[in-house]
Image (cartoon, rainbow, N blue to C red; front, side, top):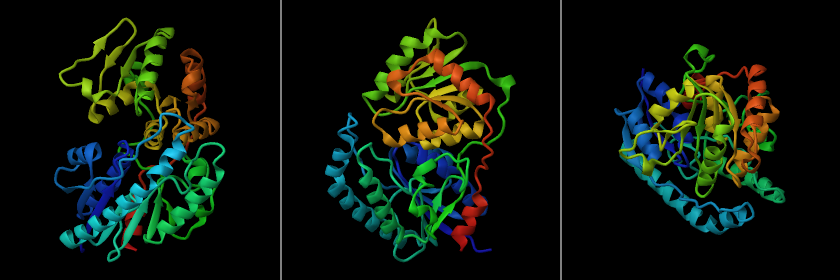
Length: 364
């Protein structure tokens, strides 16, 4: 059997793109393929730890800055577009240089629009065939589909990490749009670095795990809300503040209401998620896949102004998966009751990590 060389490029917006790429890279390595991983910053560090025997390239991405207000989100992004398109051209040139250097059989891009080659087959992964935009900017959503359709011309296949039918996790982002029927689009099922299965209730030694994350200043706002209200409910509570700069040499702080960690690395956080009866966290797409894989009850608190998280939270709540509450209306006791009610009736029936389908597409 001829083992392939794959150039695998990962976006560094949070760790979600890196974590959902882990099962794909595992499958490639499992069949003996050589994988060169291109990413940057924390995503690159995470993948280095997961696959120490792979080759790595530091490939910076777009460094997009988000507005602190909902009204400024779209105008702020539009002002950055010339710089983003310049970076995309640089990114594509860098990929062609890497193709010359490593001679890959294929390029895989997890949401990096400039990571493709004109000389070898390239494949793209995204859960947003249509971008979620603020209310009142509906035309921008249509433009995003046109943009994606144009970009998809550069790729042989497009992978959506979700189920094609219902129930699904991404909702309108990858189902209720014209691109859902595009001949290059393939629904490959949810992807997560975790093994899926029913939770082991006997090992749940924490009642509630609070994961504080997101860009500032909203991360600090969420932290303050949680710490002010954590005493409203009884039980064993753990808080992870998401402050890596405060974690060096620091140990968890035991308060009257909870154990508070400044920060935890992923290899420490995931076991803690498994041991929690319920998780309170943001509603990023990869987080939803992980919660679903673990079968956890959850309260989702989207980052204000991040329209994708806000939509995903509403969709998960309407679908009966998890309870979602806006940050400004966060009431812990009420949210806890609703989340537990949903969890008792939760029947997702999702199949995770169908990497055999992805390998087939790569070999096609």
